[in-house]
Amino acid sequence: MDVDAAVIRVLQEDGRASIRSIAERVGQPRGAVADRVRRMLTDGTVRVVAAVDPAFFGQHVLAHVSIRADGPAWPIGERLRALPETVFVSAIGGVFDLVAEVRVGTMPALHDLLARLRALAGVASIRTLVYSRVVKGFFVSDYQGDLSVDAIDEALIERLQYDGRMSYRALGEAVRLSPSAVTARVQRLIDGGVIKISAVEARGLAQRQLSMGVGLNLATGGVHDGDGAVLDALRASRGVDFAARTVGNVDLVATLVEPTPGALFETLEHLRSLPGVAQLDAWVHLSVLKEDYARTLRVGGADEGAPEAGEALAGRVRQDGGSGPAPRIRPTGA
Image (cartoon, rainbow, N blue to C red):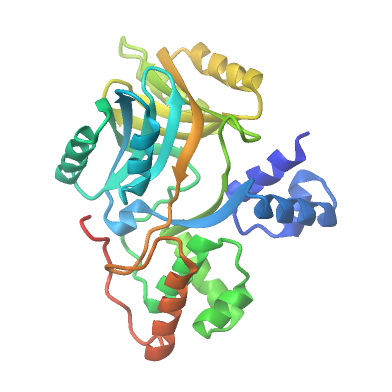
Protein backbone atom coordinates (compact mmCIF):
# COMPACT_ATOMS: atom_id res chain seq x y z
CA MET A 1 0.00 0.00 0.00
CA ASP A 2 1.17 3.52 -0.80
CA VAL A 3 0.86 4.96 2.72
CA ASP A 4 1.40 8.57 1.64
CA ALA A 5 -1.40 8.25 -0.92
CA ALA A 6 -3.70 6.72 1.69
CA VAL A 7 -2.98 9.54 4.15
CA ILE A 8 -3.61 12.17 1.48
CA ARG A 9 -6.92 10.51 0.56
CA VAL A 10 -8.09 10.78 4.18
CA LEU A 11 -7.06 14.45 4.27
CA GLN A 12 -8.93 15.08 1.03
CA GLU A 13 -12.08 13.68 2.61
CA ASP A 14 -11.54 15.59 5.88
CA GLY A 15 -8.73 18.12 5.97
CA ARG A 16 -8.97 18.45 9.76
CA ALA A 17 -8.94 14.72 10.49
CA SER A 18 -6.94 14.01 13.65
CA ILE A 19 -3.68 12.08 13.50
CA ARG A 20 -5.35 9.34 15.51
CA SER A 21 -8.23 8.95 13.04
CA ILE A 22 -5.86 9.05 10.06
CA ALA A 23 -3.69 6.36 11.66
CA GLU A 24 -6.74 4.18 12.28
CA ARG A 25 -7.92 4.61 8.69
CA VAL A 26 -4.57 3.70 7.11
CA GLY A 27 -3.53 1.10 9.70
CA GLN A 28 -0.26 2.79 10.68
CA PRO A 29 1.21 3.93 14.03
CA ARG A 30 0.23 7.45 15.08
CA GLY A 31 3.84 8.60 15.36
CA ALA A 32 4.64 7.46 11.82
CA VAL A 33 1.50 9.13 10.46
CA ALA A 34 2.30 12.37 12.28
CA ASP A 35 5.77 12.37 10.72
CA ARG A 36 4.33 11.73 7.25
CA VAL A 37 1.77 14.51 7.52
CA ARG A 38 4.40 16.95 8.82
CA ARG A 39 6.82 16.03 6.02
CA MET A 40 4.25 16.34 3.23
CA LEU A 41 3.00 19.70 4.51
CA THR A 42 6.56 21.00 4.88
CA ASP A 43 7.91 19.91 1.48
CA GLY A 44 4.82 21.08 -0.42
CA THR A 45 3.61 17.64 -1.45
CA VAL A 46 0.23 18.60 -0.06
CA ARG A 47 -1.57 21.69 1.24
CA VAL A 48 -4.63 21.60 3.48
CA VAL A 49 -6.88 24.61 2.95
CA ALA A 50 -10.48 25.73 3.32
CA ALA A 51 -12.35 26.57 0.13
CA VAL A 52 -15.46 28.73 0.22
CA ASP A 53 -18.33 27.34 -1.84
CA PRO A 54 -18.66 29.38 -5.05
CA ALA A 55 -22.38 29.96 -4.46
CA PHE A 56 -21.59 31.77 -1.20
CA PHE A 57 -19.75 34.40 -3.25
CA GLY A 58 -22.53 34.55 -5.81
CA GLN A 59 -20.32 32.71 -8.31
CA HIS A 60 -23.08 30.66 -9.89
CA VAL A 61 -21.38 30.15 -13.27
CA LEU A 62 -18.44 27.73 -13.37
CA ALA A 63 -16.74 26.87 -16.65
CA HIS A 64 -13.86 24.86 -18.11
CA VAL A 65 -11.93 26.77 -20.77
CA SER A 66 -9.50 25.09 -23.19
CA ILE A 67 -7.02 27.37 -24.96
CA ARG A 68 -4.95 26.76 -28.08
CA ALA A 69 -1.82 28.90 -28.31
CA ASP A 70 -0.30 30.46 -31.40
CA GLY A 71 3.27 30.01 -30.18
CA PRO A 72 4.55 29.42 -26.62
CA ALA A 73 1.81 28.71 -24.07
CA TRP A 74 3.70 29.85 -20.96
CA PRO A 75 3.09 33.63 -21.36
CA ILE A 76 -0.64 32.95 -21.72
CA GLY A 77 -0.55 30.74 -18.65
CA GLU A 78 1.03 33.54 -16.65
CA ARG A 79 -1.76 35.90 -17.69
CA LEU A 80 -4.37 33.32 -16.74
CA ARG A 81 -2.77 32.82 -13.33
CA ALA A 82 -3.14 36.51 -12.58
CA LEU A 83 -6.88 36.60 -13.29
CA PRO A 84 -9.07 36.58 -10.15
CA GLU A 85 -11.69 34.55 -12.03
CA THR A 86 -9.38 31.53 -12.43
CA VAL A 87 -9.01 28.95 -9.67
CA PHE A 88 -7.17 26.35 -11.73
CA VAL A 89 -4.74 26.74 -14.65
CA SER A 90 -2.71 23.95 -16.22
CA ALA A 91 -0.42 23.46 -19.21
CA ILE A 92 -1.54 20.31 -20.99
CA GLY A 93 -0.56 17.92 -23.73
CA GLY A 94 -3.31 17.33 -26.26
CA VAL A 95 -5.30 19.18 -28.89
CA PHE A 96 -5.19 22.31 -26.72
CA ASP A 97 -2.27 23.80 -24.81
CA LEU A 98 -3.85 25.16 -21.62
CA VAL A 99 -6.99 24.61 -19.58
CA ALA A 100 -8.50 26.79 -16.87
CA GLU A 101 -11.44 26.60 -14.50
CA VAL A 102 -13.16 29.97 -14.11
CA ARG A 103 -15.87 31.17 -11.74
CA VAL A 104 -18.08 34.22 -12.27
CA GLY A 105 -21.46 35.46 -11.15
CA THR A 106 -23.49 35.55 -14.36
CA MET A 107 -23.49 34.39 -17.97
CA PRO A 108 -22.86 37.95 -19.22
CA ALA A 109 -19.81 38.04 -16.93
CA LEU A 110 -18.62 34.77 -18.47
CA HIS A 111 -19.04 36.14 -22.00
CA ASP A 112 -17.06 39.22 -21.01
CA LEU A 113 -14.28 37.08 -19.54
CA LEU A 114 -14.12 34.88 -22.64
CA ALA A 115 -13.84 37.96 -24.84
CA ARG A 116 -10.88 39.10 -22.73
CA LEU A 117 -9.26 35.67 -23.04
CA ARG A 118 -9.63 35.66 -26.83
CA ALA A 119 -7.99 39.09 -26.91
CA LEU A 120 -4.85 37.90 -25.09
CA ALA A 121 -1.69 37.92 -27.18
CA GLY A 122 -0.85 34.45 -28.44
CA VAL A 123 -4.35 32.96 -28.06
CA ALA A 124 -5.36 31.19 -31.28
CA SER A 125 -8.72 29.83 -30.12
CA ILE A 126 -10.69 28.81 -27.05
CA ARG A 127 -13.38 26.24 -26.28
CA THR A 128 -15.74 26.52 -23.32
CA LEU A 129 -17.72 24.02 -21.27
CA VAL A 130 -20.19 25.38 -18.72
CA TYR A 131 -20.71 23.21 -15.64
CA SER A 132 -24.38 22.40 -15.10
CA ARG A 133 -23.68 20.36 -11.97
CA VAL A 134 -20.57 19.30 -10.08
CA VAL A 135 -20.80 15.55 -9.60
CA LYS A 136 -17.64 15.06 -7.57
CA GLY A 137 -15.10 17.45 -6.14
CA PHE A 138 -13.22 17.95 -2.90
CA PHE A 139 -13.58 21.73 -3.08
CA VAL A 140 -17.25 22.18 -3.90
CA SER A 141 -19.65 21.85 -0.98
CA ASP A 142 -23.40 22.43 -1.01
CA TYR A 143 -24.19 25.94 0.16
CA GLN A 144 -27.95 26.51 0.06
CA GLY A 145 -27.96 30.23 0.87
CA ASP A 146 -29.56 29.88 4.28
CA LEU A 147 -26.58 30.59 6.54
CA SER A 148 -25.39 34.07 7.53
CA VAL A 149 -21.89 34.84 8.76
CA ASP A 150 -20.50 37.56 11.00
CA ALA A 151 -17.09 39.21 11.26
CA ILE A 152 -15.74 36.43 13.48
CA ASP A 153 -16.74 33.79 10.93
CA GLU A 154 -15.03 35.83 8.21
CA ALA A 155 -11.82 35.97 10.24
CA LEU A 156 -11.88 32.22 10.79
CA ILE A 157 -12.53 31.52 7.11
CA GLU A 158 -9.65 33.76 5.97
CA ARG A 159 -7.23 31.99 8.31
CA LEU A 160 -8.45 28.52 7.35
CA GLN A 161 -8.00 29.40 3.67
CA TYR A 162 -4.33 29.92 4.48
CA ASP A 163 -3.95 26.88 6.80
CA GLY A 164 -6.84 24.44 6.99
CA ARG A 165 -5.25 22.55 9.88
CA MET A 166 -4.62 25.57 12.08
CA SER A 167 -5.38 24.48 15.63
CA TYR A 168 -8.60 25.57 17.32
CA ARG A 169 -6.46 27.11 20.05
CA ALA A 170 -4.59 29.30 17.54
CA LEU A 171 -7.85 30.23 15.81
CA GLY A 172 -9.36 31.10 19.17
CA GLU A 173 -6.45 33.34 20.08
CA ALA A 174 -6.84 35.16 16.75
CA VAL A 175 -10.50 36.01 17.35
CA ARG A 176 -10.46 36.00 21.19
CA LEU A 177 -12.82 33.10 21.63
CA SER A 178 -12.38 29.80 23.43
CA PRO A 179 -11.29 26.75 21.40
CA SER A 180 -14.70 25.15 22.01
CA ALA A 181 -16.53 28.23 20.68
CA VAL A 182 -14.30 28.30 17.60
CA THR A 183 -14.84 24.57 17.05
CA ALA A 184 -18.60 25.10 17.04
CA ARG A 185 -18.32 28.00 14.57
CA VAL A 186 -16.07 26.11 12.15
CA GLN A 187 -18.31 23.04 12.26
CA ARG A 188 -21.35 25.24 11.57
CA LEU A 189 -19.61 26.69 8.49
CA ILE A 190 -18.78 23.18 7.25
CA ASP A 191 -22.24 21.76 7.96
CA GLY A 192 -23.85 24.78 6.28
CA GLY A 193 -21.86 24.22 3.10
CA VAL A 194 -20.04 27.56 3.34
CA ILE A 195 -16.58 25.98 3.45
CA LYS A 196 -14.97 22.65 2.75
CA ILE A 197 -11.55 21.82 4.19
CA SER A 198 -9.51 19.44 2.08
CA ALA A 199 -6.03 18.62 0.81
CA VAL A 200 -4.56 19.93 -2.44
CA GLU A 201 -1.88 17.60 -3.75
CA ALA A 202 0.92 18.76 -6.04
CA ARG A 203 0.34 17.27 -9.49
CA GLY A 204 2.19 17.13 -12.79
CA LEU A 205 5.01 15.24 -14.46
CA ALA A 206 7.52 16.46 -11.85
CA GLN A 207 5.33 15.39 -8.90
CA ARG A 208 4.41 12.05 -7.31
CA GLN A 209 0.93 12.09 -8.86
CA LEU A 210 0.06 12.22 -12.56
CA SER A 211 -3.10 13.94 -13.69
CA MET A 212 -5.23 13.67 -16.81
CA GLY A 213 -8.37 15.43 -17.97
CA VAL A 214 -11.12 13.62 -19.85
CA GLY A 215 -14.21 14.71 -21.75
CA LEU A 216 -17.00 12.16 -22.02
CA ASN A 217 -19.82 12.00 -24.54
CA LEU A 218 -22.70 9.88 -23.28
CA ALA A 219 -24.37 7.21 -25.37
CA THR A 220 -27.32 8.11 -27.57
CA GLY A 221 -30.48 6.10 -28.10
CA GLY A 222 -32.43 7.25 -25.07
CA VAL A 223 -30.61 5.05 -22.56
CA HIS A 224 -31.26 7.41 -19.66
CA ASP A 225 -30.24 4.87 -17.02
CA GLY A 226 -26.83 4.76 -18.66
CA ASP A 227 -26.25 8.36 -17.60
CA GLY A 228 -26.80 7.45 -13.97
CA ALA A 229 -24.46 4.48 -14.22
CA VAL A 230 -21.69 6.68 -15.61
CA LEU A 231 -22.19 9.27 -12.86
CA ASP A 232 -22.14 6.56 -10.18
CA ALA A 233 -18.94 5.13 -11.66
CA LEU A 234 -17.25 8.54 -11.60
CA ARG A 235 -18.26 9.09 -7.97
CA ALA A 236 -17.06 5.65 -6.93
CA SER A 237 -13.73 5.62 -8.78
CA ARG A 238 -10.76 6.42 -6.53
CA GLY A 239 -8.87 7.65 -9.59
CA VAL A 240 -11.46 10.34 -10.38
CA ASP A 241 -10.58 13.52 -8.52
CA PHE A 242 -13.26 15.78 -10.03
CA ALA A 243 -16.25 15.41 -12.33
CA ALA A 244 -18.94 17.75 -13.62
CA ARG A 245 -21.85 17.60 -16.02
CA THR A 246 -21.34 20.15 -18.75
CA VAL A 247 -23.05 22.03 -21.54
CA GLY A 248 -20.89 22.09 -24.65
CA ASN A 249 -19.17 19.65 -26.97
CA VAL A 250 -18.96 16.97 -24.24
CA ASP A 251 -21.48 15.87 -21.61
CA LEU A 252 -19.06 15.36 -18.72
CA VAL A 253 -15.59 16.58 -17.85
CA ALA A 254 -13.43 14.86 -15.25
CA THR A 255 -9.94 14.90 -13.75
CA LEU A 256 -8.10 11.64 -13.16
CA VAL A 257 -5.24 11.41 -10.66
CA GLU A 258 -3.04 8.32 -10.34
CA PRO A 259 0.56 7.59 -9.27
CA THR A 260 1.67 5.86 -12.51
CA PRO A 261 0.91 5.93 -16.25
CA GLY A 262 -0.30 2.34 -15.95
CA ALA A 263 -2.83 3.29 -13.28
CA LEU A 264 -4.07 6.19 -15.41
CA PHE A 265 -4.50 3.83 -18.34
CA GLU A 266 -6.51 1.39 -16.20
CA THR A 267 -8.86 4.17 -15.09
CA LEU A 268 -9.27 5.33 -18.69
CA GLU A 269 -10.06 1.80 -19.82
CA HIS A 270 -12.62 1.44 -17.04
CA LEU A 271 -14.39 4.62 -18.15
CA ARG A 272 -14.27 3.57 -21.81
CA SER A 273 -15.86 0.23 -20.91
CA LEU A 274 -18.95 1.79 -19.33
CA PRO A 275 -22.04 1.13 -21.50
CA GLY A 276 -23.17 4.74 -21.16
CA VAL A 277 -19.95 6.21 -22.60
CA ALA A 278 -19.97 6.77 -26.36
CA GLN A 279 -16.66 8.63 -26.71
CA LEU A 280 -13.79 9.74 -24.51
CA ASP A 281 -11.20 12.44 -25.22
CA ALA A 282 -8.19 12.87 -22.94
CA TRP A 283 -5.36 15.32 -22.24
CA VAL A 284 -2.39 15.15 -19.87
CA HIS A 285 -1.69 17.81 -17.26
CA LEU A 286 1.99 18.59 -17.78
CA SER A 287 2.36 21.44 -15.28
CA VAL A 288 -0.28 22.81 -12.91
CA LEU A 289 0.32 26.58 -12.92
CA LYS A 290 -2.40 27.55 -10.45
CA GLU A 291 -4.68 25.75 -8.03
CA ASP A 292 -5.95 28.34 -5.58
CA TYR A 293 -9.45 28.33 -4.10
CA ALA A 294 -8.84 31.12 -1.57
CA ARG A 295 -10.95 34.23 -2.01
CA THR A 296 -10.92 37.35 0.14
CA LEU A 297 -14.12 38.03 2.04
CA ARG A 298 -13.55 41.77 2.10
CA VAL A 299 -14.63 44.20 -0.60
CA GLY A 300 -11.43 45.51 -2.18
CA GLY A 301 -9.58 43.20 0.23
CA ALA A 302 -6.00 42.14 0.66
CA ASP A 303 -4.10 39.63 -1.42
CA GLU A 304 -5.87 36.31 -1.57
CA GLY A 305 -4.39 33.66 0.68
CA ALA A 306 -2.12 36.09 2.52
CA PRO A 307 -2.01 35.68 6.32
CA GLU A 308 -2.34 39.45 6.69
CA ALA A 309 -5.93 39.17 5.50
CA GLY A 310 -6.81 37.02 8.48
CA GLU A 311 -4.90 39.28 10.84
CA ALA A 312 -6.73 42.35 9.57
CA LEU A 313 -10.09 40.67 9.97
CA ALA A 314 -9.18 39.45 13.43
CA GLY A 315 -8.28 43.03 14.31
CA ARG A 316 -11.68 44.17 13.12
CA VAL A 317 -13.33 41.52 15.30
CA ARG A 318 -11.44 42.72 18.37
CA GLN A 319 -12.49 46.28 17.75
CA ASP A 320 -16.21 45.61 17.35
CA GLY A 321 -16.43 42.69 19.74
CA GLY A 322 -18.17 40.55 17.13
CA SER A 323 -21.59 41.95 18.01
CA GLY A 324 -24.26 41.57 15.35
CA PRO A 325 -23.99 39.90 11.96
CA ALA A 326 -21.85 41.50 9.31
CA PRO A 327 -23.43 42.16 5.92
CA ARG A 328 -23.05 39.44 3.31
CA ILE A 329 -20.02 40.28 1.21
CA ARG A 330 -19.81 39.59 -2.50
CA PRO A 331 -16.58 39.74 -4.50
CA THR A 332 -16.07 42.72 -6.74
CA GLY A 333 -17.57 42.17 -10.19
CA ALA A 334 -19.38 38.91 -9.34
